[in-house]
Length: 447
Ligand code: PLP
Image (cartoon, rainbow, N blue to C red; front, side):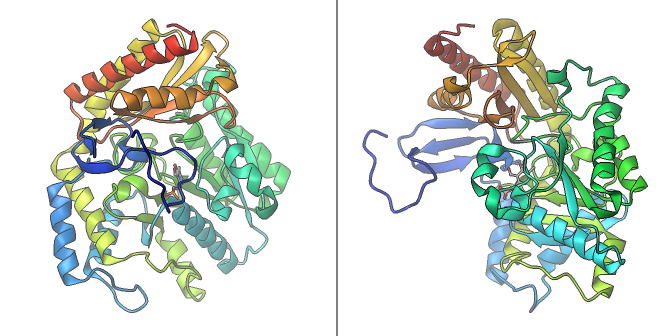
């Protein structure tokens, strides 16, 4: 955009972007006709691509019936149908679904549900929710208390009741082998240590992203970690909450990423790919007895006005139907493996790529100044912004944040819609290569 009009929109920063003209499949076009390949599904949201005709059709049909039905006044067909579908997809006895409109709302709802459950069973002294550092669980004040990303939490510290944190299992930084079960045990046992230090009788829940997202750049759990975490939570009667806001929805090859480790949490939170960008949608899926206990005790003291609205639920159901009809979870595994291989191959050409990690179509890579020590690039270089901008200029959208507590350690998420083909992967790698070359040249880092 050459000349920017004054806007009454409060953009979060001074940065302005071209105006969107339309979007279809894995591509978006701005009003100047420039095409962008969405290599990060927006912010890991648009899992089945844009303008899917089946989803649009389902939404149109629902709009003709009703665009809204307040949950305290009516039950709705799409709400019932989507909850029933979720109950079949969710592991174990997780078959009660509470709808919300986003990830932070889902996290807040999950911790309030956990608290009400423990109150109902006479364990009022439990209120601490242990999370990890770094981690991202949302930016509303309750979720921020769990988020470990100081650039976003520090300004609000006085408003937050900080929750205990344990280190995220960053084996690649600690020089440990993530495929060694000892490594998984080493990091998981940090949870037990923390529980004991806090006083087990005060701990309500542990919340974990099975595969890390924005704060860690697709951090994978080391071998045995997820299972050991489950054991520890069982041992101390602590609820295990899986935050699958990014990893849920199929892009790791299973609808819930945790299914890859056969671990059943007590509560799962979902959003992003669940509504896939068609409507704001999120969910808390809880063990049946948790929901029943809270109902017996008088009901869940919670709720957001727009939550569970029939239009969002109709869209969400149609998204899952498309994932199943087009076998997109299978595609995520096949094309995801190709994407991972191609990203790893870039390490031969670019010495600044220190690590490539992820699963299926949820892949990340991290830039470093020295791969042998994993020393991050100088913070002031602002690599996480510069590379994203170079890619954007070349018509490729990727997502970036910083993995070392948010202030350094530039990582990038490559998580295109689950409809991508091998040809799209070629295009992603081609454009990324151009961007890395330009970044290397402009920063003097070379390859
Ligand atoms: N949890 C995780 C793992 C996330 O990645 C996010 C958003 O990035 C959230 C929660 C918060 O979701 P939202 O931005 O929809 O509030």
